[in-house]
Structure formats: C-alpha cells, structure tokens
Amino acid sequence: MIIDFKARRTTLVASPVDGRSGIPTLTTLAESLLGIPITKGEDYVVFVSRSRKVCKIVFWDERGACMVVRRLNDGRFARFLMRASALDVILTFATPSTFHGV
Image (cartoon, rainbow, N blue to C red; front, top):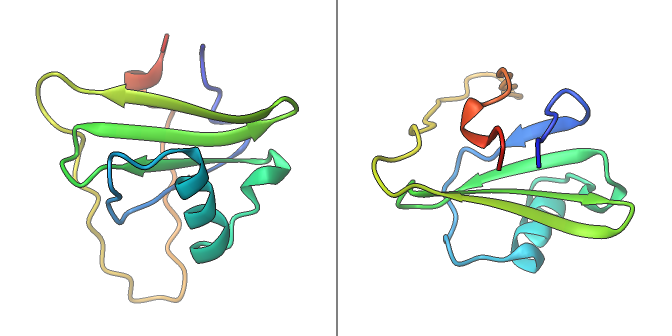
C-alpha cells in the first residue's frame, strides 16, 4: 500500500499516545479532542507512541476504518516538539519515505 499524503489533509499529532491504542481509541481522540471528522474520509491522522518506536496512521475510506502501523526495530521516530505562540500551528511535510511500500 502506498499512502498518497497529497490526496487528503494530513494531521500529525504532536502529543505522544499509548502505542497499544487501536482504531476506536485513536478515532475518538481525533474526533473528540482534535475536532477532526475522520469518519468522513477526508483526513489522515498520524500518531506516534510515547516510546517513538511505533507510528500509526488512521483514516477512513468507503469500506471503513484503516490503520497503517510502522514499528521500528532500531532507532526512533523524530521527536515532534513545538511551542505554539499563535492560535494555530500548521505542520506541512513531504511524503515520508518511511511509509513508502508499507
């Protein structure tokens, strides 16, 4: 599967989550806390675990919920720390090569 990050709005959640969380928990976090209507099928939401060894992309399509998981054997995903001085912080990035060919 190749994920086309240009096809949908992509949100990178800067706060780490429990790596054991599944689709129901992550969908609820996206909808309730972040206000992302993920079940409409217009968004990718990227979560990174506290250990930064697991990254999960959650999205919905016409068939239902999908989750792509990347677990690193060595190393960790980059730490996403930021301080927001404005009301909104928008992160944009190129398609991560880490997920190519998942």
